[in-house]
Amino acid sequence: MNIEQARAVIITELLNRMGAKMDSFNSKEAFYFSPFRDEKTASLHVNLIKNIWYDFGEEKGGDGIDLVRHFLKNKNLSSEVSDALKWMREFSGSISPINPIHQKQKEEIETIPNIIVERIRKLNDQGLINYLKSRGIPVEIATKYVQEVYIRNRNSGAKYCVLGFENMDNGWEFRSPFFKGSASPKNISFIRGSIVKPDTLHIFEGFMDFLSLLAHHNKKQLLADAIVLNSTSCIKGAYPYLYQYGYKKVYSWFDNDTSGNRATEKLSEYIKTQSGMMHHNMQSHYSNRKDLNDSHMHNLGLKQ
Image (cartoon, rainbow, N blue to C red):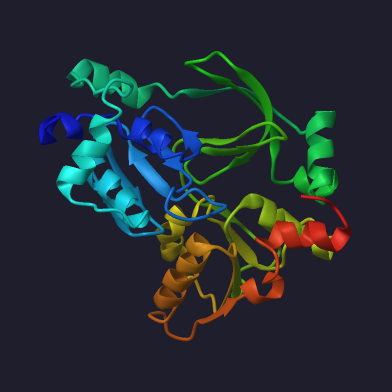
C-alpha cells in the first residue's frame, strides 16, 4: 500500500478498526467519541466528502495517514509514515478505498440526509416520558423545550421515536433510551430567559444538563438567557452571542472530561477579551460526577 492508496481509505472504517464509537452522522459528516481519550461528548469530526478528520479535543486533524500515526503515537508505538502504512496494510483486505465523487453524486450526498425527520408532535409517548423521569426531568418542564420526533434512517430504514431538541439552524439533537444522535446542521441552541435583556447567560454542553438545572430549581424557565452547545465542537458558535449582548456574568456547565475542560478554557479565554464580563466555571459544583445531569440524578437517588 502506497501513500496515495492509504489516503483513499475511508476514515470512518479506520476509526471503526480503532474501536472508536460513532455518536452521530449525516450525509456530509460524522462525529465520533475520540479513540485517544475517555469522553462523554463526541469531539472527533469526520468530513465524509473530503475524507478528512479533526479532533477538537486534541486540536489535531488530517487525512487517514495522520489519523493512524496519531493513534500509534497514543499507544506509545512507532508512528512514522511507514508504520502507519504497515498498520493500514494489515487491514487492506477488510477496509475499503473511497471512490472519487462526481459532481452529481456530491450534490446528492450534500442534499439528502441519512436521518429523515418524518413527524414532529407534542411530547406524549409514555416511553419517552419515563426516560425523562429516569433522568430526573419532570415532563411539565421538558415539554417546553423538547418534542416527540419520529425519525428514519434513510440507509437502513430503521425508525425511532425520540426526544428532539432543535438548534438555531433547524438541526436536531435526538435522545431516547435506545438512541442517541443528531440531524444536521449541527449548531447551538439559544434560549431566552424570562428577564428582558438580562445581564446573565448560562452555557450548557447538552440539553439534558439545561433541563437538569431547571428541574433542580423546579422552574420551567430560567430568569437568564441560555445557550446549549449540543457539542463542545460548537463552542465558537456561542461567541457572537457574547459579543456586545450586554451580558456581565457567564456561567458555564460543561462536562468533567477532557473536551469539557478544553471548552471551558476556550470560553474563558474568549470572555477575557470582553470588557466587563465575568466567567463563572460551575464544574466544581459537580466535580465528583461526570456532568450536571449525572449529579442531578445522583442527588435524586436515580441510577445512571
